[in-house]
Length: 176
Ligand SMILES: CC(C)(COP(=O)(O)OP(=O)(O)OC[C@H]1O[C@@H](n2cnc3c(N)ncnc32)[C@H](O)[C@@H]1OP(=O)(O)O)[C@@H](O)C(=O)NCCC(=O)NCCS
Image (cartoon, rainbow, N blue to C red):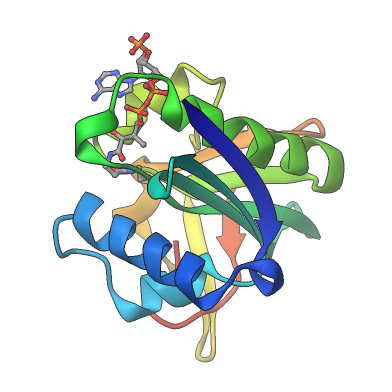
């Protein structure tokens, strides 16, 4: 049986955090950096446990995105992964549901950068590919992030024109 736990980073133990990091390192095949880990912390986590083994995780953190002259309170999804031996069993859906509830109840917009395998998964849950140009507000000013255009997916909460320009705030590592 899979047990779901939802908690802020502040309420996860060092052992919980180690289990999350190990799951993410394995699921992304060594392509999960310390900066990616930093992006995963500071918000609300959903953890799926099979006994004492962590089999699924997703997190949502707050960011500010510029959209049509406004700074949208954005729930950005990070660290979505299911253990390779437990996929296509609904565990991804199990951990995304509370994250999407948080987004719908507390943010203007949900957003994430999808991996290839994530596209059918997120689209099946109502996430939509951003159609307009993407940018980042860097310490040097506004920068176009065209390589990220195709990978940005959103879960609109308020009315959102997906063909407009969307600008993410600055952070270390991958900005999207
Ligand atoms: C993406 C991921 C989290 C999905 O987790 P999961 O537990 O397998 O997902 P679910 O079982 O809840 O799938 C729900 C639905 O999403 C779709 N889906 C999930 N994985 C899919 C895949 N590989 N190909 C096509 N559709 C897929 C299906 O419609 C599926 O329903 P179905 O199994 O009844 O057909 C998992 O594949 C994973 O950890 N991948 C590696 C890390 C990663 O890329 N994470 C996303 C980062 S943005």
